[in-house]
Image (cartoon, rainbow, N blue to C red):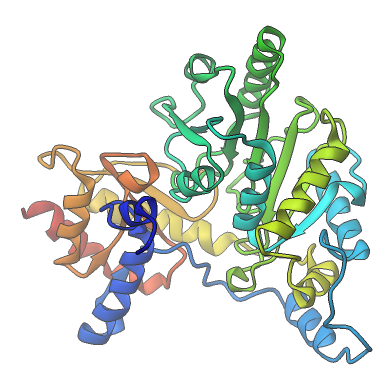
Length: 396
């Protein structure tokens, strides 16, 4: 018999809705033809990796030196960690040493390691809504409780709601910017206000919660938008990220953890993340792609196609009469369920399937009454979905 807890989770209607939609889309494409199915379910970047990445893959593949595929220290190769320290130093505006970097099996593994390192049984982790669905499981994996915190109408941080949600059990808050599923970027002012609230809370309770910056979409921003740095304004902060989205290599599972060197017990926090990398069974990040990333992390990327598709999918929503939050980055559009559906996003997404449209219900992101469109898809999929969306909205 499997665990009762796991059984309850996997039988929940909201569990794994994104993957379920993605798998259902594969079946629909076989039945109706790929050109007749409009699959916006999965955030699977379809831009090809930059040439620099391809060249690095070829170069690393030719290495036949002794033990080139062997184990290395759990946090990764020193030369790779130095490259990630340089990258993080540029992004955060704070000098980071390689000693504060732990290579990971994508951002998901990084998050699990950081949460395990921070959370005791019964501790709480705050997450501004809506948020990436898997946060629920990552926190519960390690005996914690996730606390959804309502944001403002435009999905910006509601600092008062965060203040009210803080307790002596609060171990951390996860900040995902640009946000999945809304594409919202939290401003420098919001981050500074968040830091002030956490400092105030720490002075009262003696516990200063960590800010966990989940940043796989950091590079994908539109216009003049920029992701705020957290390390300069709050010392108990850690970045978890990957190269899945910005370099279009999600299947290679390569990322890293960067601990703010100014953090309380920073060296102990790094050691805890290294230990968790080992005992959670990851052992180390993939050797091959550590070497690839060290050579190509700063490859030049053109995200203008995502911005173009963003404009096109918004035009489709306007034509269909659907309201949405305009993204500032990433490649998602968060759309309001139309009137007459009582905010039942699960039912509306099931209705969309009748028109061969696949979208992810907002309930899975703690965003009831909305649904997510992932527009990292072929341009033809977006343009050809126009009439189907309109027909779906006009029928019930």
